[in-house]
Image 1: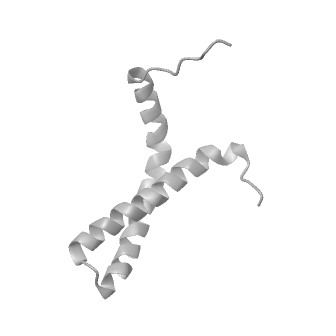
Image 2: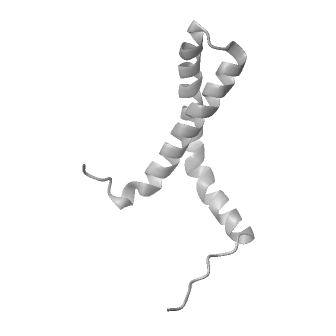
Image 3: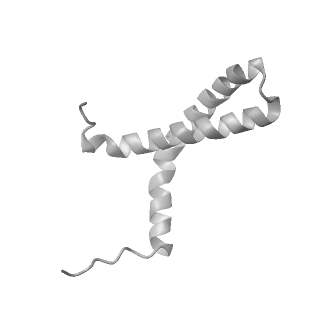
Length: 82
């Protein structure tokens, strides 16, 4: 299987992260409101697509900002001398 070139990693990471996060969160939220119902999956899919359409672009903006903010509070990994 051919792999995605590394230059696309910065685009694939926010896309993949937002995809799975919104999938799980909207699924749990929809299930909590509707329970296991026939309409649950239709409503879940609809909610998920809306959430992902909002989350994916938001991740592109927020990920660099969060990285920068965390660099001020998180200690860098120490490199070990050989």
